[in-house]
Image (cartoon, rainbow, N blue to C red):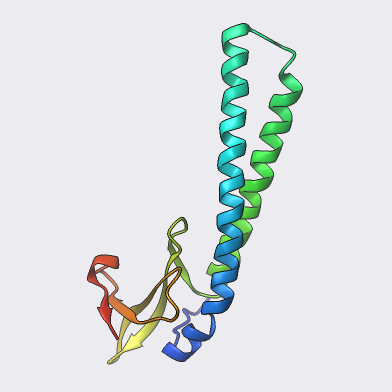
Length: 132
């Protein structure tokens, strides 16, 4: 598959969509964290008491965790399938491959920013962000 390069205009046009997907991912992530904690608590009770009566609860908890994990993966896939690189899902940090003066760079966007206002070299990362 050929690598996609974004113009600043193309990348900025995707910001509202990205905001929506990241909002949904954040909600799923919060729910997943709560489910994982609940499952851990049930597993702790089982170990300490040897209670087999919690088996159904454990199976259901694992199913919920798996379902939410799949939802999260699907949301990330929606982003990456467009050619956008997800750097940090929790922070909503993404990079758009772009060309600047004939070389590959990344247009860098952090969830909450109104538009893309930074770029960085491919090997520089977030710390190397520079204003456009």
